[in-house]
Image (cartoon, rainbow, N blue to C red; front, side, top):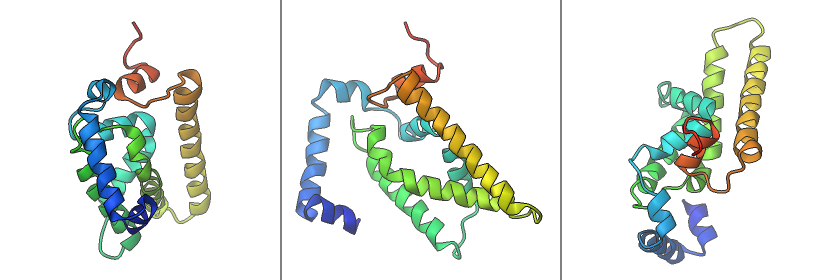
Length: 169
């Protein structure tokens, strides 16, 4: 949060920018058409963009305890910012969720480490193979969303069309 305040040019600028987003989002037709939805909309959009990462990251939440400080910090950061972001009417957009990308991937990696931990033999090879598989899946998702179906704006309807859940008219 301190870094965000610093990058915004101070607390006053950050608050003014947030207020501007909230006030303008309810007046812009595109934001009204694409920026609303239920509280779990970010989860749906993230599941469409990075399904394996989101599932593994959510799995790591069930393994949290006081000794896992980095995982706990990342989880609290995501949860606290999620609470703020999902309450902006007409302001839900996956581009705002970019700040969760690194924490989600960190939590997914921690979950992968926990999955291979019971295996004594070839644990590192399995971990490397798991990371490589996830990278391949993520690259495939990128290819679908940015090359095959080049999306400029990652809104739910277009994401659903890109992964062929909704059919184009």
